[in-house]
Image 1 (cartoon, rainbow, N blue to C red):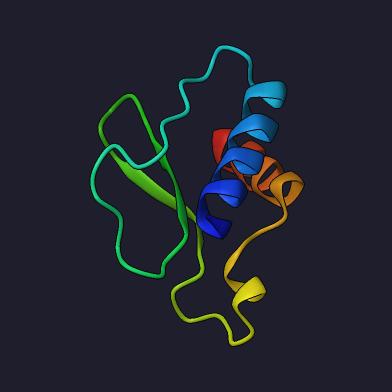
Image 2: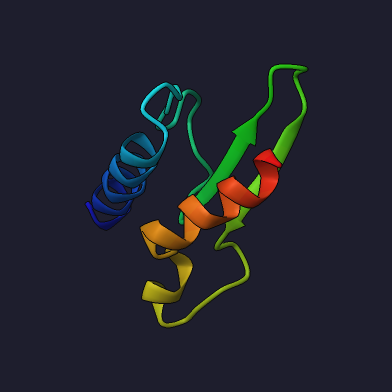
Length: 78
């Protein structure tokens, strides 16, 4: 449940900041106990914005602040 809540929070923040962006949550089965956010560009390249794989314990360190993800995305669109 905690992964879903955090995914929803990040998704909402991204949709508010970029209303025309398509935000997908887990289009494929995710890795167990991981939380990652990636930007898929139109040319097919992938940019990792956040990975919590090597973070924690505590588990809360695995999740980014939604506004931080928005700023990371803005930095990768320039």
